[in-house]
Amino acid sequence: MKARVFSGVQPSGDLHIGNYLGALKNWVRIQYDYESIFCIVDLHAITIYQEPAALRAKIEEIAAIFLAAGIDPKHSAIMVQSSVPAHAELAWMLTCVTPVGWLERMTQYKMKAESQETVGDGLLQYPVLMAADILLYQAAIVPVGEDQRQHLELTRDLAQRFNSLYGDTFVMPETHLPTVGARVMGLDDPEKKMSKSASGSGHAVALLDPPVQARKKIMRATTDSLPAVDFDNLGAGVANLLGIFQALSEWPENRMKKHFAGMRYGELKKQVAEMVISHLEPFQKRYHEITSEAGYVASILREGAERVAPIADATVELVKKRMGLYTLS
Ligand code: TRP
Image 1 (cartoon, rainbow, N blue to C red):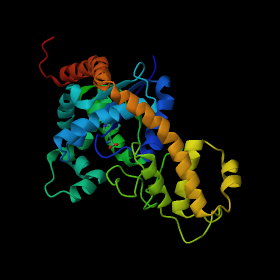
Image 2: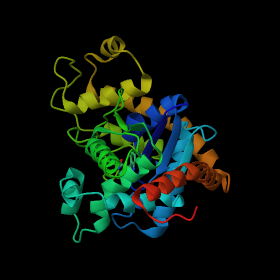
Image 3: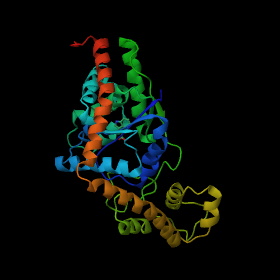
């Protein structure tokens, strides 16, 4: 039996080339090596207020982006978290074995809480819900970025705590950090990781940006005070542009060096923009084909939920039994 992979994306903000190169591309590549579940985590998204109509639309947009990027729905399940009630059920059961102190220490919680006027309880519970997502499917591998490492560790701690209180129940998940082209930085601020919530400005190239706009953003990217590419003295902005080019082209290091050494920044940006657009165009064409067929994306999400629900339900049933909760069967 193949090991199970689970990962999730929040339906908020615009998916961008950093998400593609850091996560999606990797998922597409590994999907057949595992039994894969890719989840759109709408219950996580509402830990911060979302405009309801926009949230709904965003969920289908992300599913269509998964499909356009090459997630194969015949093999991998693409599903929405709230469509499988077991996520919320298991989250509650895990909440009851989670020390509040573990949650208050989470750096993402502290960061997010800082920017909120009133902090919803969901923001504190966020990592418990994430642990439930993973443990529900007994996922062995969870491909996520560096910023999720602490949440993954909490998931493992919770699994261990539950197992020691109630007997062996959960598989211990591994963190699986992507290896290539993983870290795309903001175009306007190459010290910060490209972020979904900051796009719209010159920060990120969204996967659905019209090519003209994508080019504009790249041409305006922050570089440094040097005139041309010097591999012995690469500023963060230039390194980021080269990294994007390399991750998309898959050129080896020596070819990159030969081609770009001494190239003026204006020309470098032009070539990066062309490389990005040459990937965006066929991707967006597939996206539009996928979304133009009425009901297609919805049917994929229904199938995905139907496929995984029995696995999730079986885990909830087992956890109920272990905890002494009443079961009808
Ligand atoms: N917290 C993750 C993020 O913001 C999203 C997520 C929710 C997730 N549940 C998950 C990722 C389970 C991996 C596995 O990126």
